[in-house]
Length: 274
Image (cartoon, rainbow, N blue to C red; front, side):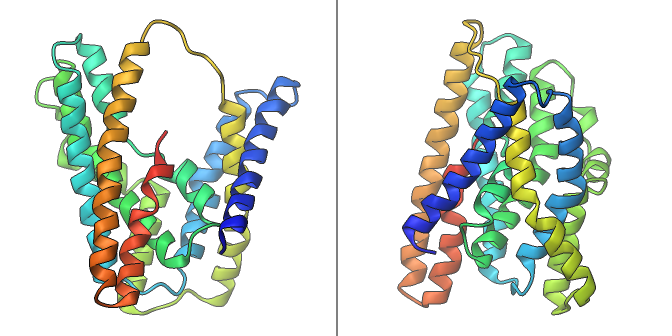
């Protein structure tokens, strides 16, 4: 996809987002309607879009490296949140840690980028999401709970983390598609057709849902916390993007395919923040 087509595609998504916001302001939608749309997205269209995006993708060592890279980025971010919130009230500490290290891959990055990037880039984005999800439900939650005075973070134990992950449709689909890729198996044609049909609706519904939920509010209270969180996030993620950029050049000097695959992970991160 050329540069103009990428900008045009992004413009369409932003137009749908703006349309959702304007229709809400006009009274056609309510904020409560977004709950239904969110349930449809997280349980139907997003899993279907993952199935569609993973179709025909061979799981390589580079994609597994993206999974490890997401762990390292998440670890750096949670440490950054802990440092930025040092000496602050308990609730603010927990809020800062949670918001410094979370990625809205499923409801924003995947719908927004699925029509812009290649299938290999889409797979890399999904592998990053898997690692980030595990870290969010596990160490991130435990550190935030500890910071808020919750003891040793008993609610974020291994059993709790596994329960959250394996009751999340998107994570189950990730596991299934990775397993199919490792086994070199493919879904039946009918199942793929259903996934393609439902997955095609994901980007539209996700952007519409975000538009309905969008509100322009910037109260004075908490502005300094927001500024610290954004500064920490963008600093760490910018450095991560630089590391990915060097990784692309290093791999590209070997095999072109390997360089492209590493770039798949590197080109996704800036658009993933919320």
